[in-house]
Length: 396
Image 1 (spheres, rainbow, N blue to C red):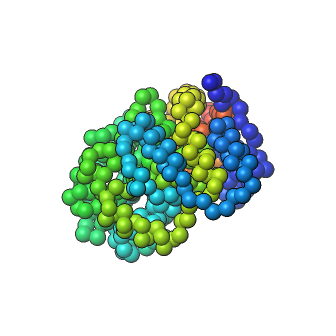
Image 2: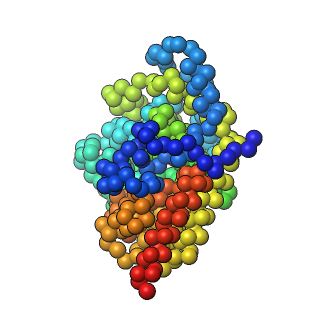
Image 3: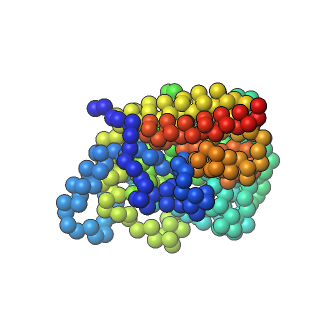
């Protein structure tokens, strides 16, 4: 079946977060939002059809997550990422961030150290600080080609007896890395030596480019599997964040029991009846759609890459391996972070995530969401190019 991502339904006046909050966050509604990480692409028809069918039954009361949902996810993860899970190791969660909070509560005490690898998705460090843990920053290293890698030497130097947990973003948001097996094994070795639990956020694991392969942390070896908590789900892959359903998988019985105690204090319940059928349908029917989506998203990325190459004196695009989030080095514009934000809002009429929100290492960068239809991507490129042209003319 052929899937068309040329256009998408309008999200104006639908209470979509990225549109509704424009005035509050950017001071104007007169811009195109390209920030929060959901897609301006229609959720697949096979997902919506499953929801419509469920609504033929007139009662939508409490339900348990059906085994079929997690079994569909298990089958998908085995086929797509060559990792095997057991059904009894699954927990329902409404979001990865909520799961992260539970993991921090379960595996550390107030004042204990939790490692984050910046620049990184802001809830990683907000969660640590909100729960009164010590934030242990292990910044990623930027390589000569603009890509990023782990700084293992720095990681080892930051660990002490009170360091309990490492929050891993894999694939990484915002720098777009798909961590290689040998890189992850270095993390395993360090964490094993110091008895550190790894919370592995793998929510972007299906959005891969150029034949890259995601290696689930739990698939590395038995040691990795015994010290990790894996967070996976459909939200990013199929643009289903509004269904609020993801999974946590824990194989180690001791870790599972600790997590369960913290989990039950929160009372997650079992999600919504519509989420269950949507989640199951996505994993059962989504492979062909995903192939087409990835091809479309990469074309969008290449459009942005071409623009950045044209204006390379101003912008450098970080090489991408996964996600639909472009990490743009804007230091060539020679603007302060405040002025850089103003440039995108006032001159380009685009609402992006400021790099500084991902940690100090994001200073001078911006994150742009290219998970949009072809029509919207062309408008993003047009607006940004016009702003860069004006700046070039003014400079000359």
